[in-house]
Amino acid sequence: MTYALLVFLLLPLLAALTAQAATASPTPATVTNFSRIAEAYVKLVLAMGQHDPDYVDAYYGPPEWKKQTQANRSLDAIALEAARLRDQLAKISKPTDEMERLRSAYLTKQLSALEARVHMLKGERLKFDEESQALYDAVAPGFPETHFQEILDKLEPKLPGEGSLLQRYENWRGAFVIPKDKLDKVFQLAIKACRERTLAHIKLPLNENFSVEYVTNRPWGGYNWYKGNYRSVIQVNTDLPVYVDRAIDLAAHEGYPGHHVYNALLEKNLVRNRGWIEFSVYPLFSPQSLIAEGTANFGREIVFTKPERLAFEKEVIWPAAGLDASRAEEFYAVQDLVKKLSYPTNEAARRYLNGEINADAAATWLQKYALMDEKRAKQATKFIEKYRSYVINYNLGEDMVRNYIEKRGGTEQQPDKRWREFEQLVASPRLPGDIR
Image (cartoon, rainbow, N blue to C red; front, side, top):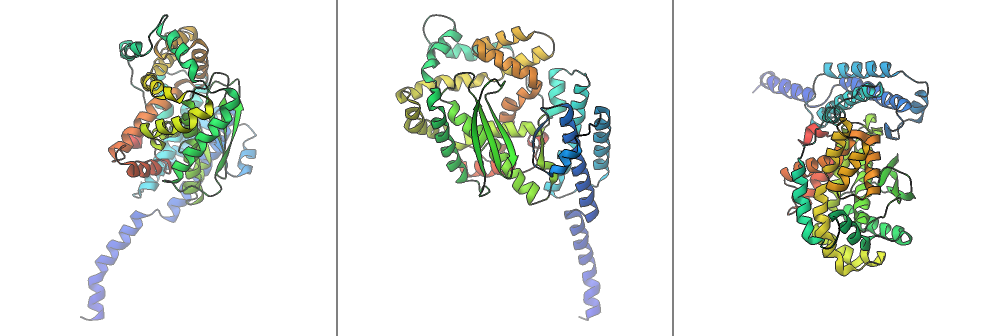
C-alpha cells in the first residue's frame, strides 16, 4: 500500500476523530464566555448582598470583587444583568461533557433564582409553592392533617401517662438533655467520630478544619459559616435545651459529611482544580441550598447506620453526657417516629406565607403536629418568617438526595457504593433538576 493511498484511507477517520474531539471538550471561545459569565455572576450575587444581608452565605473569591460591590447597584439593574447573562448562556452551544453541561445548567438556574429574589425584595409576594419553585427549583408535597395524626397515634402508646401527648413527650424527653457544661465535650466527641468515619471514605484536603462557637438569640439550631481555604466556623444555638441526639445530628449535618465537606469539596474540585469561580460564592436563596441541606441531612444517615449509631452513642456519647445509656433504645424508638413529623413545618409555612393563618396559629399547628413545645414552635415560626420557603430544603432535600443515591445503587446494604455516590453528588454542580 502506498503512502498516498494510506493517507487517503485515513482521512475520513482523522476527520471523525477531530470532530469528536471538538464536541467532547469546550473550545477556547466557549471557555472564555463561560469564564466571563461566571465572573459577572459572582459580582451580581455580591451586589445582591448589599440589598439582602442574608443572601451571600459564603464568599472566598477575589477580595477586590467584594470591594467593587460596595457601590450599590439597583435591584432593577441586577435583574436586567441576570437576564442578560442567562440570555448569553442560552446562546452558547450546549456542551456534551457532563460536567460542562451541569455547569451551564447550574449557572442558568442560579441566575433565574436570583431574578426571583430581586422581585421578592421589590415587594412581589408569591404563594409558598410558587416561591419554592422559583428559588429552589422544587415543590414540596402537601399532606393532610390525617397523615400527621396517624404518626401521632403511633406515638401515644409509647408515651403513657396524664396530659396531652405534647406534655407527655416534653416530660419524657427532659431526661435526655445534654447539660450545658458537658455540651462541648459531647459535641467534640461526635465531631471526631463523624470525621474519622468520613475520612475512611472521602479524601479531604489536608488542611481542612473548623472551629465551634456556642451562641444565643438565633432563629436556627446550628449554622455552618464557610470561610474558604477549607475552613468553617460552626455555631450551635443554646437558647433551647440540646437533646442527646443532636450531638451526632449537628456534627454530621454542619460538619462531616455535611456542609463543611460539601463546601470543601466544591472549593477543591471546582474552584481550584477547574477554575470555576462561580462556586466561590454561595447565594443562600438558590437551588444550591436544596442540595446543600439535603446532603447534610442525609449525611447523618450515611455516616452511621442505625445500629452503628446506637452502639456508638451508648458507649461514648451518653456516658460523656452523664445520661443513662440503658434508655437509648427507648429514646430512639420514640425519636424515629418523631422524625417522621418533619413535614408539618412545611404545612405551617405554606399556610402562614399564603396568608391562611397568622404567626400564632402557625406556632399552634407546630405544637400539635410537630410536637414542638411553645418556645421551640415560636423559634420555628421566626425561622419561617425570616427564611420563608427555605424550610423545604431540609425534608424534601433529604428525601430527594436519598432517592437519587439509592436509585444509583447506594443503598444501606451497599455502603461503599453509597459513599461514592454521595461524594460524587457533593463534589459536583448538580441541582434539584439533576437528581429528580
